[in-house]
Length: 438
Image 1 (cartoon, rainbow, N blue to C red):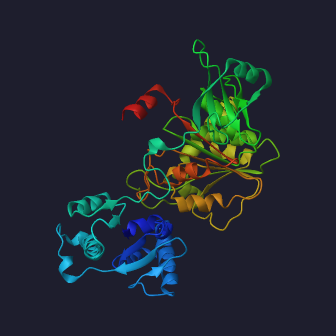
Image 2: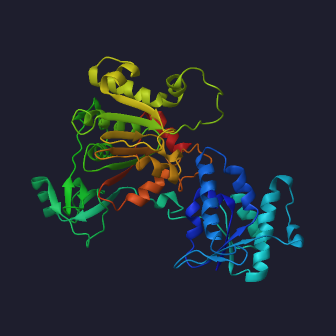
C-alpha cells in the first residue's frame, strides 16, 4: 500500500513517517515549501517542521528520494513525488488553495502509477479530505496511536460484580484479592462494587492496586476536609485518593467545567506540602486565549501573567477562605504556602525534583509539549494534569489528539500513573445545566 502524507500530518507528529509499517510513504514535493515557511517559528509547530526536515535529510544521505529510500527494518520506503503539468489542472481552483491543489494533483500522479486501490491520501484537514473524496481518491484522517472517538478513551472507572462475601471481607479487612482473569483492571483503576446477589444494591467502591493484586477500599466521606475542601461526591473522593498517594507519580484528571479538577488538585497539593515529601507546589497552565486576544499587556512578568493565571488565584483564595475562615489574597497564600505560579513557556531544559506540579488546562498541549513537561520531573516529583478535552483553545489539536488525552492512553497500564474522569459538576446548578445543554 502507498500512503501519501499531507503537511499537517507531519507537523502534528514528525514520527508519522514511521507509522505505516512496511507500506511505502510518499511526500508531495510541495510540502517542503510549507515546512520551510513554518521552520522558523518558535513554537511546537516550528519544532516539528525542523524535526521532519532533519529526519528526511538524514534518510536522503542513504539514497535517492526520487527512487525511494528504505526507512528501516519492517518499514517501507520513503519517496518524494510531484505532479505533472497536466495533472495540476484540478477542480476547485483557488489562489488560497493552490498548495492543496498541487498536493491533490500529486496524489493523482501517484495513483496513475500505483493504482487507485493501492494509494491512500492521509490528511488532518477535513476540507481537503472532502475534496479528495470528490476526486475519487481514497482518503483517511491521521489517527496516530490514540482512539479517534473521545468516548472510547479510558475513564479510570468501571463496575465490578463480586460476591457478597467478598464485599463483607473488603469492609472488614480494607482490601480483597483480585484476579485479572475475572476482569482486566488497569493499575489504580477505580471500581464500583456490585453484589452478585441481584437483590442487594451497590455496596462499595475500591481502587485496584496492581503491585499487590488487591482491591483496596475507598470510602466517601463529606466530613473529611483537605486544605478546607471537602469531597462533594464519590468521584471527588476518588480524586483525593490518588492525588494524595505518594506512590502515584502521575495523575490525570479529565472532566467538564465545574467538576472541581483544578480545585481538588490544588487542595491536595497544599495538604501534600505539609509532609516532607515535596518542597514546592508548582502550578501552571498553557497560555491560550479563548477568543480574540486583548493585545499587549503592560507590566513585568507577574503582571503579564496575572490574567492567564487568575483561575488558579481564584481557587487559592477559595481554599484559604474555607480553611481559615478568613479571606486572604492569592499573594498572601502564595507567600505563606511556598507556591510558585509559572508559565510553561520556559520549562524546557529544567529539572524539577521533589515538587508537586499541577498543569491546568492540559488539553491545550500537544503530545510533544506534554512529553517535554513530564520529562522535567525529577526524583520525588508528582505531576497532575487536569483539563477538559471538550474545551480546547489550541487550533492545532482536537479532543482526541491533544496532550492530555495522549497521556491518559499511554500511561493507563503503568503502576506509577492513575486517571479519573469526573462526570458530576459541583460548581452550581446553572453551571451543570450549561455544561450538559449547551
